[in-house]
Length: 215
Length: 271
Ligand SMILES: Nc1ncnc2c1ncn2[C@@H]1O[C@H](COP(=O)(O)OP(=O)(O)OP(=O)(O)O)[C@@H](O)[C@H]1O
Ligand SMILES: [Mg+2]
Image (cartoon, rainbow over all chains, first blue to last red; front, side):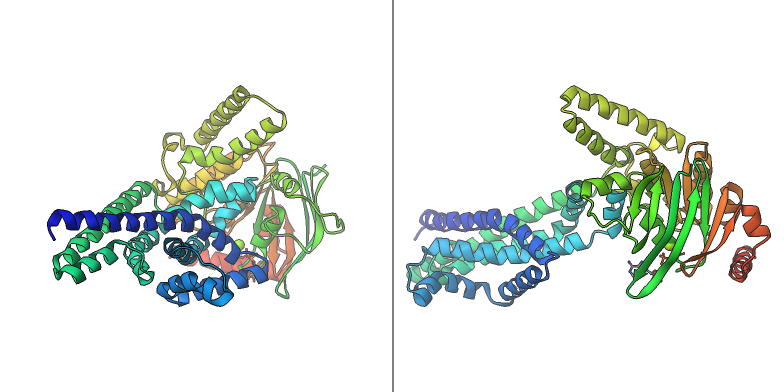
């Protein structure tokens, strides 16, 4: 198998990988915020339930969750499940939302009480304080951990092959197995490096932009 | 008529009674200095006035408008609460400036929001809004000149010294025209060489229509600037009067003790 053919086949896998990465982010970034509000809720029962949920999601392997979402509906309830790719997307969004929610929570809790009080004595509403004062500071503080988590997501996309989704690693493994050549593995290694490298640069840029103020 | 009437304020935290019935009045244009040893309840009192915490008991009126009354059981809305808060301004020990905004925006942020709210209620136009914002900007600049920081209007808080940050915080409180401006140990977080500039700004604010309450450990400042001194110990007012009465002729033992200790601290610091 020549270089061009390998590249074409890998590109198919790369498309799936990118799609999974993008959809997971689009779903998990806002869902994570919702989970954060739940875990910080003043209603004890809600915060307990949400924290328990986050504990379960973070305490079990993502691969297990992918398998559960794919096979669970059919085997437990006897109903038709969702497609492979959809199953992976659902598991990824929920899993990453749980991780993001903890990062958001850490960010929100790191903002000094004095910032809220300053807003209050200036006659601002709770909503105004959150959106005009707190949110931006949280954003600055969570950029480094979010960068880490998002880079991990790039590599975690390869877990989708556990239910035979044809993402990048799966395609490469097929080629390696069928044609007894090893270099496509290095080839996709370079793909991942390029992808995570670009993200590293992007996050570095954002961090630099936000460094116009300290604190 | 007194600007501020505080009567019988009680506050308990986890079974510890921190304020045990505080009452005093303040006239328009007066400066009240609150002194007392650590943990006496001074901050708690200021926070009660500013509605950051709710007293368990007591009554607070500003210009005969009831701000708080534990006898009244009707629930107040957030909007009302905010309106009540705006009678008071509060300058914090730790400044609490908004780090992501420059000096000008720190001053104008809340004022813009309040103007926007007013204009929306009055169904004003975009032009009204623009005009209102321009007015706020002009006022902010005027106040910045007053506290000597006009040149720093585009700087971020992290680019300022502690003393400058605190002067911005004072300006930020002033722009909303509070009836009573409160300071909670405004110089305690500052290096000694920076306290002077802040105290000077505060004394400079003294005028017939600005009423102020200053919690402070700066005895010289209290004596010089205050019209009235309150000494709080363990949640009650132990001593109250003009600076002369309190400093020269203290009646209570606690005040005498406190005073001799702070003199020791002052002279000890100089030796
Ligand atoms: N939110 C709170 N929860 C529980 N206890 C509190 C709280 N705020 C204050 N206290 C307690 O109330 C007492 C009075 O505190 P406060 O801060 O009012 O004293 P202070 O006179 O301002 O002291 P300092 O001169 O050190 O600032 C202290 O014992 C403090 O531990
Ligand atoms: Mg205090």
